[in-house]
Length: 434
Image 1 (cartoon, one colour):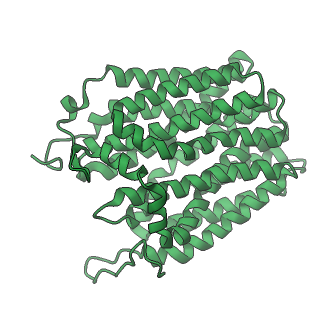
Image 2 (image 1 turned 135 degrees about the horizontal axis):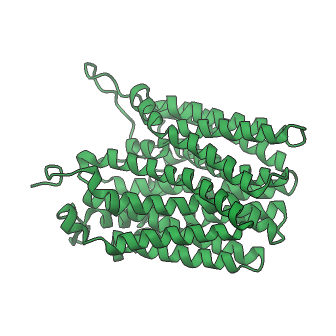
Image 3 (image 1 turned 90 degrees about the vertical axis):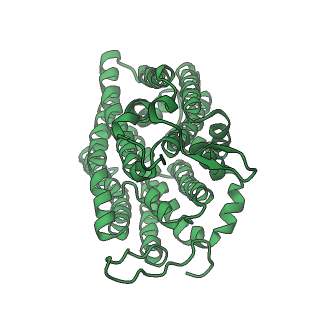
């Protein structure tokens, strides 16, 4: 019986993949909005607080390189378990941090753990979820991740109001990671629950689970793969990098802006939690838009909305109603981001060579993560001059990203024709021709 034929239900992976992912993302969602506040409380300037908040994205980018090796050597479930424990160690470092430097180191390690955990859960899906169900499983996984980021800030708000301090919120992440690790440790061997994993043959002839092979292929020869596919990565990949940049810039700018205009700590978490709820509510609608109308109808409104939102925000800092403006823009940015849910993963799947997609997907993911890492560092640097300047510059880059996506999505990912028509010819992703 092939993997596609064996009996399968999405409920069967709920405990093994969905619940640990939800717990891990709840912990992240609780602490990430408050990192600038904690840094500021330790004596960091506004710009330094932004730089420390950026360390989680930088950690994820650096972690993309060894994560494939880790997952391929110790397996998907063990990688998620050890990533959870690494995150706990990192959070404990943050808890005892006497100064912003130590806090930044702890946040950087959280990013490393996140990169390993993310690839491991994706590899798990590849090994144990049949191809016929995989798209739905990955879509559900993405929704669960956003759901955790929705719930986390509300828990953070309650903890801050109960304890009177932000440091206690780090314990939410500790408990969440312990829960994720315990779930994975107490589960029976995945093969006994899901059956024999889908197998893949490595270039050296060894046979192992498809997820582990995917993980190694994504990270092995990463920079050579980027060079091989430089045509599409330079054009459409730059647009993808700007998508990642806008998302991470938004995640850093909103709490940083709130600190700069004097909003209280629990109120910051509450605002970000409500915004996360809007984002979470739209992830399914985004998939429907992409499938029914084409990728452009998700990508362009999302990037234009993110760009315009940050441009508007840039002019509101010193207004008497600056708090109301921040709340309104935060909600607008969540709508824009929610409309673009899953666009990077979808475009990567569209572009990847069908015979060997893993190396390209690794390069594509690295491109998006590169933008995610660079943008908050740029925000921190620009904040030295003015946080309004930082918001305005990132808003302009959002509109540039919209132009790139509008130009190159039709060339590399033409809308699929109706069944009665002849399929359009799509250029090879790595070709130098547009």
